[in-house]
Image 1 (spheres, protein in one colour):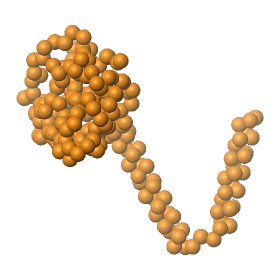
Image 2 (tube, rainbow, N blue to C red):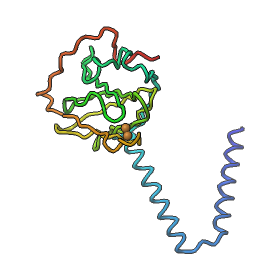
Image 3 (cartoon, rainbow, N blue to C red):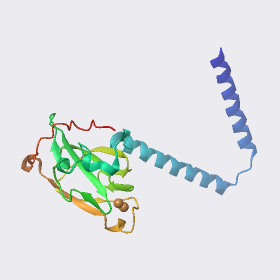
Length: 203
Ligand code: CUA
C-alpha cells in the first residue's frame, strides 16, 4: 500500500520536473552543450565502473592499523621480514616500508604472471605508491596497512613512484622493481619468522 503511494508520488514528481523543464526556454546551442557534458559525465563514470569491475582498480578496503613509530619492533614489518616472501599457502607476499625519501627494501625481484600481494606501511608521513600500467596506486597512510594485489604480465623493470607530496625530497622518492620470468624466479630463502602469519598483527 505504502509502496504504491511512493510510486505514484515519484511518477508525479518526475512528470512535474519534465513539465517544468519543458516550460523553460533553453537555447538550441545550450541544449547541445548540456548533451555533450552529459555524455562526458557518462563516459567518466563508465571508465570508473569498468576499471573497478574488470581491471581490479579499487581502493584498499581493509582497515588494518599499525603503529608507524614502532614498525621496526612489529613482527610483520621488522627489517628481516621486509621484501618478498612466500607464505605457507604458496602466495607471494611483498612487505615494503615507505619513508622520507625512499621505499625499503631498495630493490626487489618478483615473478611475472603471478598474483602478488603487496603490503605497504609508512614510517613517517603520508606517501603514495604508483606503478604505471598496473593497478598499483594507493596512498600509504601512516598508521594503516595498505594492501593491494597485482600481477605483472611481462618481465622487465617497473618504476615505483611516490605520488603523494611528502616533503622537499618527494620528487626524488622513486625506485624500481625487477619482474623476472616466472620460470627463472626462485623464492629467496628467508629466515622463518614464526609469529608472521600473512598479516594478522593488528594493533
Ligand atoms: Cu613520499 Cu612523496
